[in-house]
Image 1 (cartoon, rainbow, N blue to C red):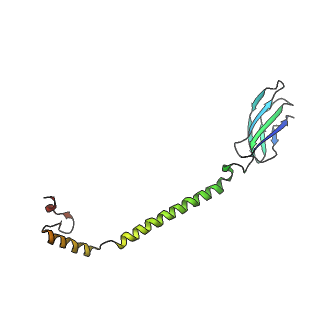
Image 2 (tube, helix red, strand yellow):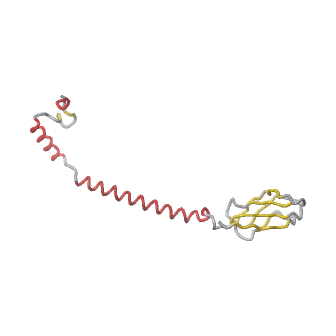
Image 3 (cartoon, rainbow, N blue to C red):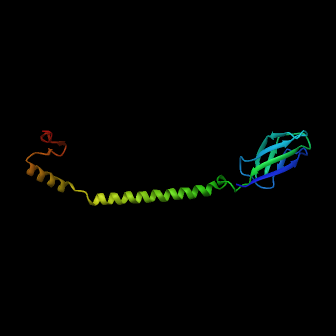
Length: 145
């Protein structure tokens, strides 16, 4: 972040032009009185490199400080946001790829209904109890004995 400080002598103008364009919300102003007191100055940013100041007596020294545009991360927010969003998108795609692999593996390891029914009948025959009653809607009460 590059700070700039400029001095002006008040000649009655309330609109001043800075040497550089400034980042929004970074312009601060002070002025020096005849008694060498340094007081805050109300500054309104007009954009680009123009500012408006409150009226102060003539010949007072005005000191304006600001951050030069392009030196703050927020100044390049659009570019920064795109890079950050692309990085997050890459992470999301990678995560979805891993989830998709797990789904494919699960799909390849699944049992179809015919194989499951054959397995249930084999277990019921070996154990001598009924596992499922009817059309698979209810678990047999024999399992709770």
